[in-house]
Amino acid sequence: MNDTTPPAPGVPAATRVRRSGRDWAVDFCLFLFAVLFGLVTGLMRLEEPSMGEPPWLFKIDQLTGVLGCAAVWLRRRHPVRLAVVLIVLSAFSETVAGAMLVAVFTVAVHRAPRVTWRLLALAFAAAVIYVVLRPEADIPAALVLLFGLAVQSAAAGWGLFVHHRRRLVLSLRERAEHAESEARLRAEQAQQEVRQAIAREIHDVLGHRLSLLSVHAGALEYRPDAPAEDITLAAKVIRESAHRALQDLREVIGVLRAPVGELPQFGLADLEPLAEESGHAGMRVKLRRELPGPAPERAGRTAYRVVQEALTNARKHAPGADVEIGVTGEPGRGLTVDVRNSAPAKAAPPGPSAGQGLAGLAERVALVDGRLEHGPTPEGGWRLTAWLPWPP
Image (cartoon, rainbow, N blue to C red):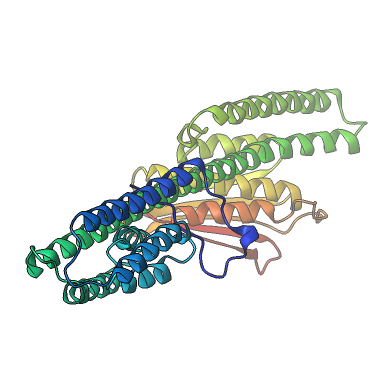
């Protein structure tokens, strides 16, 4: 029969958990057990009175049994104290034995096993004292003692079984909650990684396209008297760049429903079209590649993004500057991407997002265990260098 855990000592009565219907049912059943045990014991003593016992001892025994049964309702508030009192009373009272067994069971359920073992030892000592004080006329004392020890051990063992079963269930519940919490954290981390990947793609792809639009739109603004052929060419580039930017945006938005691995990917083979596209925008770009063979796909994708970010920054902050792109490396030594631009014709004021692209690029390079360096050159230009691992 199960039992509910009593509130911790010192907890205010206002914060105590109210007993449920099941708790009341359990308490009533245990109370009924103690009463029936005492009634059966008392009836047996009326039929076969002990030899040599004074009549007043039987009356005291009955009164003790009634008080012990009534005290069963206090077992949740003071389980250990009640058990000690009832065990001491059982040293001379046999009708209180049922209430004493209920108290031992309650302590075994709700307290540490070491407390139960100490109470059980005290109960064994009380059983020995009872056999000495109130021996039976026709039953050997050893048999009475063994029966008492067996009943007490059964009550304590049953309580210990319930105690360990509850601890096991609680442990399994905590493990399940912990596993659920870890799964939720992993899901949130995966969602955050997806958001960061999409944010990097949007910045890299759209930043490059929109910078081209800005260059050609600025040329039309500052040269309204340009020849019709130049205006037509600039309008064509703006239209194509806007169309490509829209396509890139659709691709990036489309992967919101797909795994991160399905994001649009570019590699070293796409560097030439990237340089040519910047050349069409009026930039003077020189590309140099010295590779013994195809580089790892992951390093190639990161190298493309490094070059793309460098070209975008050169268009924004160094208009009219020459840009040199060097891609070198070999297995075992790594892949090096070096982008340099000369001093700008005129410095562009930093925008509200200045530095964010380099921060995102540094994060992208760090994800592949690479290194990123950037800063001004002695000639007044700018240099962006990335080293990426290339296994042998």
